[in-house]
Amino acid sequence: MSTTQQQPERLQKLLARAGMTSRRKAEEMIEKGQVTVNGKIAQLGDKAIHGKDKILVDGTPLAAPELLVYLRLYKPRGFLTAMSDDTGRPIITELITDIPERVFPVGRLDYDSEGLLLLTNDGDLANALMHPSYQIQRTYYAKVRGNPSANVLRQLVDGVKLEDGLAQALHVEKLQPTPAGHTWIELTLTEGRNREVRRMCESIGHPVLRLRRVRFGNVDLEGLQPGEYQYLSENAVKELRNLTGNRIQAPQTAAKPVNKPKPKQKPKNKKTADASQAPHKEIPAFTTKRVKSRESKKR
Image (tube, rainbow, N blue to C red; front, side, top):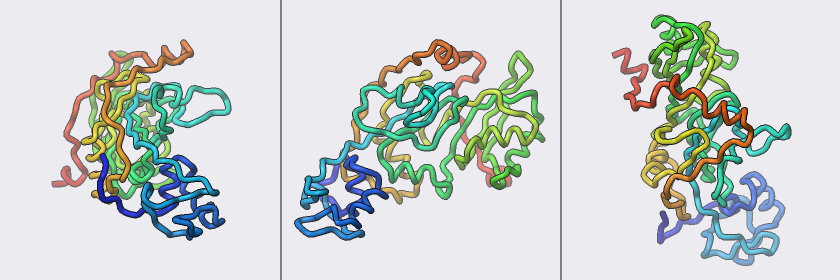
């Protein structure tokens, strides 16, 4: 998507979007006088229009901004939600092929969890989606030990105390038992705290044995297998912005067009591959549900 009447933007944002550096580092470069606009040394807070104003960084013209890319990925178990790992463990970027742009995960899933991850190089949208004030819904399927009663599960909606404060689920529903005597449940949360679902279920005496995220905001996991990824449609990206109350404006650069699903990258390690492909028959099939809020239940 593009616009014919571009608006001036802060220089640090333009530098970051061009893939040169982070915004924080860009601010430092501006403060050190390394950036000029139309022949004048820039000041922090200055704005410009990329492509119209002459922006130089250490005397070199600012490169064209990157295309903005928005992906959904099925993260298998046994992969880190990280851009690198010193110990050599598999990381999610090993799954992303044929994407020249450098994309980053929106939030994270822990090493032993699987399911939906959003990835993008649109920093404004990513930060908004992760910020707790926007209350973006995240839905999970969790296999928990034992067979929790309805009253026990209700504690997750009423709220449980964790070491970093009260945690509440927006919606909890029992799905189905497993042959081994455990239970699949569905939970919807509006925060993305570290290992929040696992800690909540442990607090009620039913620790998580397997965890799969199936929805983030308006984007779901349907149609993807472990390791597969796909571009989001322009409508899906627009809906993600709408979830932030339209406070995140459409960027001035072109968004990546929607293509066919990209082929998945098979995990190299057989043990990891077996873990990531495992027991779909035991995991409830994905179904779209109407999520009930705590407020609607009170009514």
